[in-house]
Length: 486
Image (cartoon, rainbow, N blue to C red; front, side, top):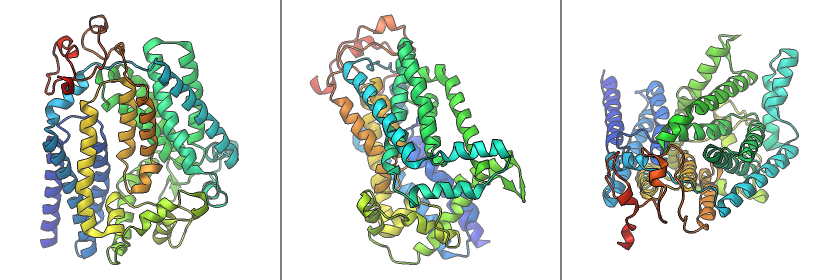
């Protein structure tokens, strides 16, 4: 009874943390941002831990309390950033989303960036495909259609050999085909949306089909889900809701592609067996549940039972993962393979990763988790404040949105590189070389007023008075000078 009351108290504390975050950090707004995404991705692990925790095991309870405390300190860090910058999310985020978006993708430097990045990414994707020699997903799908049999062992062997038997620079290639190329596709999508030019549509179709092939090359599901998921989040909970509403049909189509691919790849992996028999719908749903709440959370808890009982490595694992970035110091089977072997009876054919809280505890202990949770909350919210208060140029919104989508998956320093935050930061810096955006037209359907009344916009748009109501005559505000020049 005492253990049940303790768990109930922890659950109530977790609910209070979620409410505080929703009220004072998210501003009661469904807009995706780096801090919102990070907070949201931690919740499934916490929920799964509640379902798997053994109250009699002290290490289980420490792990549960560590996750709750990490979320609490992350929220505190974000609130501290809001206080220091005098940021009021409940007022400023709706005003930010209500402001018009200025279309700047036809400027020469940005056209060059889109063309060069698209060509280079396609070349890297083709080279990567040739280095691998096969597409795991399409090969096994063809075998299934031809023979009607599922060979999950062959699927797993083909995936493992890509990273173990030969070096194909998978992480570097992913920066082009899974990070830069989806960004270029988004740029082309909005260029076609704005002017309906045939060349943009043709380029969009060619690059999209090529990227679908590249993302399915290794047979994994993560890169495909995050690449298309970023586009879906941009349309449904992104920075321009008026435009998103008019594009949501395409967002639904993108979600259907992800669902079909997830179901097909899960089937080909042999993970749809329920009680010894293949049941596609039930098996896919159970696999998805295990990936976000069920076995994923239980596996993390089993790993942390061991890591909480041994001394911290004081950053040694973080440093080793960064050293693996160099081909000459790379290990064929790294820390992820060791974690997989710990959970699957010595099987090193797969790879696992720790969560943010687990990685910090393993490297720096519980005190390190307390400090870094607070610091990460503060830093991510500072970036979000700069995002909201900055100019509403389309190129800026797209790059920073995808950068925030990558940063939400933060686990350790290596993830900043692997998930593409550093790459997108470099893209943002390159686009900033364009200098003053000049007089830009409004993006279609991005403003409450007709575009003809708002296209007379001088240079350096986007500096708006804070706390503006949703519907306001923007013309005098747009003609005002930036605050730093007033």
